[in-house]
Length: 434
Image (cartoon, rainbow, N blue to C red; front, side, top):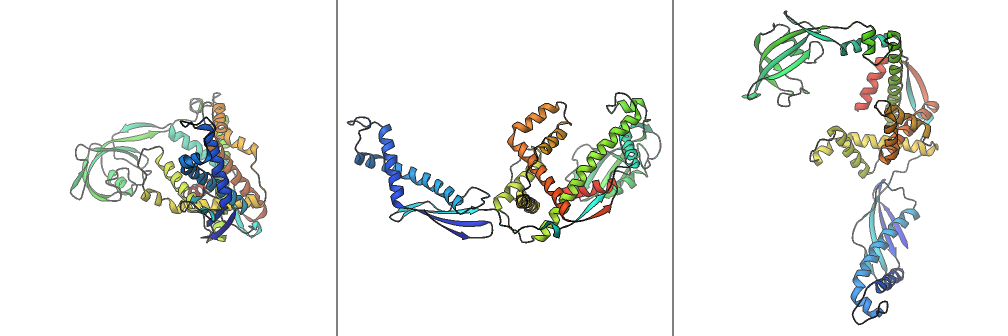
């Protein structure tokens, strides 16, 4: 078998394969003999059909079967012979052709890019110098209090912190939204992000109705109004003042602390914050490392098929099971972030390969158990992950990337940056959105 490889790009190659004619003919003859043992023809005893008759009756069928099988096996052997790191199944560029010179096979194959060794000592990383402090615990307690707030009607103009109930209609380009009735909206003043609306509401009293011209935020929940200016008929239905609970035994028990001990609740809060902080630090370091690696490899090409798969997965994650016909335009929206994610993932995997970093099974188990703790039946969730290869591989890939980050931090140029808990959480959230 003769194989030639032509580089179309750093991640795409054209293979030309030729299998000797004698070899293919032997396989066709062998296939015809197999058929002769299986078929029955009038006038011939089973297994005694003359070869000339088999060739006449079943020759085209045997030839086509052998060509297909030989092409597949030849492609696989060529990949192994040329030590190609394939990223997707080879695609045959044209139908294989059998002539006197042999079987000609032309195929295109996507491969992972070949990379030079990555020197971790050239990478600069900032690690957060941070810990959970008492103020963080106190802030979380205040957040928990907000979750148990009681709203009481009041007869006065609303102020910041109040919850208001609104009814409204809006006119945009001569169109009234909604066509019939009113839309309802409840917001907490100072937290809605819709400053123009809040300012208008704070000048009204319960039961009052006014006309306002408002510019709606781009992410407003009503698509027909998002990012548009409208004439709004606004009615303030009611004003409610929040009453926060006391941090006492009843409050503590409502969050699953059976003893009702406030100090025990604080201890649980600290543990949860420390767990959240650890994950945020890891995410931030991973994002930093990905950025540094992409800066070091600005022209890195990646296989198109992997980018397409990643864009599809990102879209599916956003749709969250919604039944929609996926279009090319929808996928194109995710191509840039998908390309970035694939590039950084390949570079992290390359560091793992070059430095023989292997997946730590104990850390995989720990990661799965951490996820399982959030469910009512943790053992069943753990078993589900180990029984589903796709889920397990997702966790393994994440753990391996964390191990790579840890290895790089131990070998890179590292400087510590003092940060607060909230700054680290915000930075990790921002990194996850990029």
